Length: 549
Picture: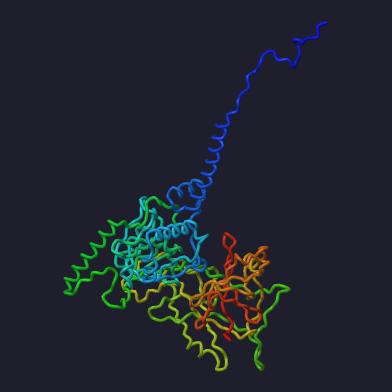
């Protein structure tokens, strides 16, 4: 019997199969290429996302929808910054080397593109007086593609040149060209304007040229102008056009033409020629005949409703009435500031509310509204007794129809009767001794969101708590609620997104920046308005009603 191998044996291979050798070299090269590709993608993402000021990075981020639209800031919610006059701006940038200046310009443009969300240090803001020497319309070949750019010289320092941007829609360009004329003075103040530096350039002759843009994007007019125009944030930037907007050849031609005109004017008058641009003949600059100012948008007057006290709410102590007199409710109102020549006149709300809220948007008084004499402290002292504090009393004005909103109208040459709207503060109102304020509801910072949702409902609401001063100026201060370490870690209370804007009456000194302010039921702030932004930020407007110690 044959016990040999069977042809059907599964373990018996009829022929030998050649084995494939693994190419380790090819696999090594492929893995190294993949590692290099991953490393390049990782470094490229840092290059693109961390440097949006580069034209190629900005273009890629725009296609990926990673560039946020330019934000319009409010005066009380602007990024923390420092206000620099022409001399301080010149001293800051003139000592920088080429590499340091390039790095600084990259940071300035990057902060502007990111809407100042991750700023290292303080944002440089421009203040001072500047004279326009040339203007031109912005186009597709510029960084800002729509609006007007004005080339200005600092009045106080001839070594500083500024190009001030006015981004706007094409519809506003005709009025802007008639308003922003050569010789017009631009006055930037810290209480009205927030113009940030986004580029600095060292010229061949040693001067410094800066580029500034107003972050408020507000409305502007002139004391002898044709109307009001409003700025708009740019939708996108053309960074490939490069900085500055006035190139060297164009700026040189403008300055040469300006020098020729000054030489001809000096020869015609028989006096010496002024060769230094932007420097007045006298040490003290003369007052401007025509000046560019920013105006505030008119807001509707809120209807007054009787106060409604919430249940189980803590009440502040009322003011005790003197003995021997009947309890009589007094109506307290904020007296309007006394008008003086040369200062803007601010329209005041009448005591008797009209059936429909109205807003006055024109700088001129409508013919249908009678002239109202301005309130003076002397008239208030006559109306009050000898032993009482002066209280502003205004006579009710019967208003049958609401005042219409008037568009901007041409202003005559005689500007003696023209009043410009302004956002300058420093008003006056009645103050009280500790614990002697009128009856009202006392709340803490944790109840502010409820007030933002439901409103004040016509009642007096007081605010207490501990606050830290973030910003302080002549008559205003911006505070933040002071939180404990556990609240910061656990994100309780939402204090990081709450901003308290305190307005002080005339004669008061706001607390310095960095100080801690404590307010209790004896010395609270009076809340006037609570606004909630789209990003959840709470802006709480309060005023000081306590008498100083």
